[in-house]
Length: 415
Ligand SMILES: [Zn+2]
View 1 (cartoon, rainbow, N blue to C red):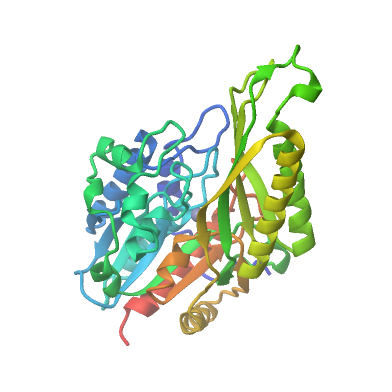
View 2 (tube, protein in one colour):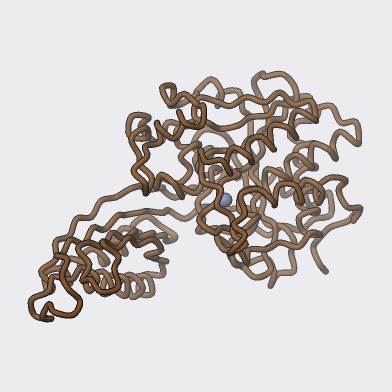
């Protein structure tokens, strides 16, 4: 059994929409995406989404935090929201984020084809800076929307070139003066369903095209600054050096060991070396730790082990250390009643969708604090994500569209 469900007629628009969007923001060298928020690539994706939504008669607005909302039906309480994000990590894959946005548009087409008229409005969302790839805080748009980050702190976040979020928004024609929570918008949403490509490989061994989320692991990001002294790679005696690369290297290995011991994951995926010269002992190494685990205490234990390793390596090498938390996202358990209702809808439509935990953060995790929220995963046959090799089969994507349409029809249809 493939788990792709019945009614294998391809959805009329998914593949066509996908072909259009996949051209935007792709690096021709790596084949990966560089859709960072408030850049021209991001603007192209936003314009594309807005155009598609307007072609379907949806009313599009950009909220005060830069999130896009496309309304099918009037703005009134009890709306059913669906969507995801359009931004990417550096050299990200095509599916992480855009799959949920494109599937939402295609699901609207399926519902319009069968002349479905939503009793509760359906609203398609595209959240801004979900990956935190430019300003360091993941899910920034949904954090701002739900009040999970202070707007003043957000405005002064900087990218690697030193540009603040506020300046980047101004350059993109958006006023950063109004950042902040939107209770009025959230109070009007009765449910949020985010469809997302699976990150990891749990569905393929089960032969299932689709899955439902149970929970999101807690997740922290920390910045480690190792400060040494620049010197000549040839003439400086080893004993005289204060080389920050060495404690960094030890710390990266310690993170792996701590993760293995704790049943967690811990990654140094971003490193900035100064002056970054082949023949220079570095003066500074800045590195970011990303740690996740099934519970918050295990994330804390893992981080503490990494920090104490960093401290002792720095002492050995005469290097200074400062460590700062950039974000922490607590454990999220999705709404059980909504998940059960969706499971029933999917079963009635012929889909089997196992329930999975996930170690990836999502906007749905922030919406869940305010609105009954669920997530649908589409099978990722290799499990690879945040990479140009990220993939989902067209048949599975189309199954996802049909499933999402069935869910929206149920949630937005007659009681
Ligand atoms: Zn994502």
